[in-house]
Image (cartoon, rainbow, N blue to C red; front, side, top):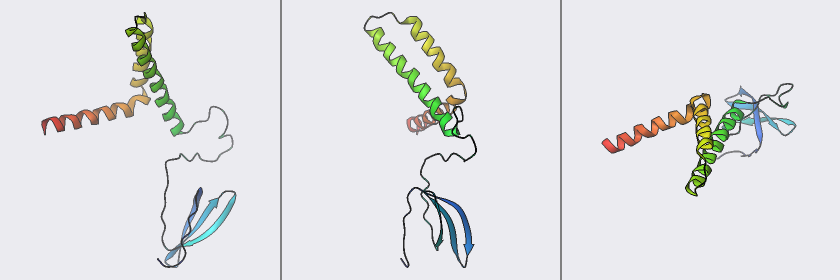
Amino acid sequence: MKGKTEVLREARVVGLYPRDGGRILVVQHGDDLHLVEAQALIVATGAEERFPPFPGNTLPGVYGAGDCAGIGEASTAMLEGRLAALAILGQLGKKIGQARAGTRASLERLRAGPFGTRPRQGKGKLRALLKEVACG
């Protein structure tokens, strides 16, 4: 490899411009902006949601799409955990009928809404795969 290779962690490319067969990058690293000349790039985007900067974006009640998905997944997991605990209590002889029915109803409402879309799609793909394997 010709030239110098440099790794910038926790950096964000905020501009990319062509220049003489290469590229000039404007890179935000901490509070500093750098101009970086590059013939080739390796971009590792990761999986962290980047929330756009705007006034008030840190106020309570302001959420990004990833936050909302996480809230939905956590809510479903908590209800499923409660159902598991209630099942164990039922096996120990505790009376849990009404609590179990209420928790199941809450879980079904959550799964039927927008937060249940991805799990429903996943179940459909899993069923199709199992059918293909069993019949294939």
